[in-house]
Image 1 (spheres, helix red, strand yellow):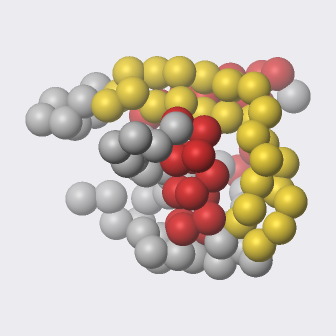
Image 2 (tube, one colour):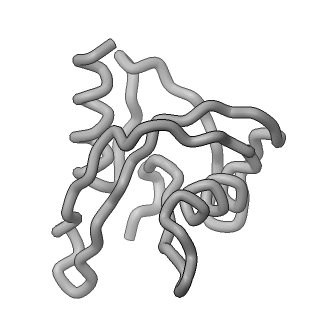
Amino acid sequence: MYAGLWCVPCGYVEWDEDVRQAARRELHEEAGLVVTLGDVVAIHSNFYDRARQTVGIWFDGRIVGGVARPGDDLDALAYFARQQLPPLAFPTDAEVLAGLCRRA
């Protein structure tokens, strides 16, 4: 369904898991990176999958370790210039990235 499209690394919060711990875990599992998290950048309801609506929370963060590599849910991992973003899988990622680009 989303083959060939890109997204910000993401995932689900496990039962009894703190949302910040989930964000750090998912980024490590998917991208091999260890991060410290800062402020919340955005919170959005995700309505693109009507059968499974979710809430997304995007954090500011800083890489403090790890090795960037595609993990368990990624085919590829790359950095993009904000003026050259690839086709994105999720509309909320596009909204968040557009807001970050306006702030920069």
